[in-house]
Image 1 (cartoon, rainbow, N blue to C red):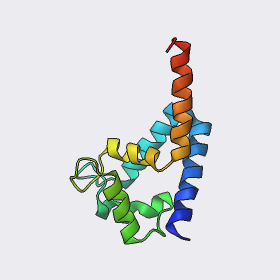
Image 2: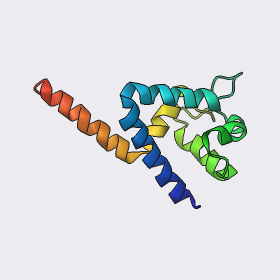
Image 3: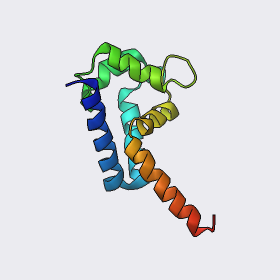
Image 4: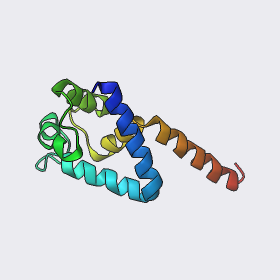
Length: 115
């Protein structure tokens, strides 16, 4: 399976989770995922902790380069690791359909307030 297919599978999964769990439930599940992948001593996801724990989230088939790419893509502060906020932002960025859905609901809510 190529990286594009894996990404498409993830996009489908995250959107389904959002629909089934609702916003709060999805955030809770993302936080649980972060806890599974993080380095317990540092409190962040490092390349090493991601490699060590990737199988628990079905990511065992990703190459070391793909895992490093995930950390690099999400590392907004340049410290070489993902904190919880960076992880959640990355998960949403990897699911453009979910972002579109979120934007739709935000716009609907704002219209209700006259914006």
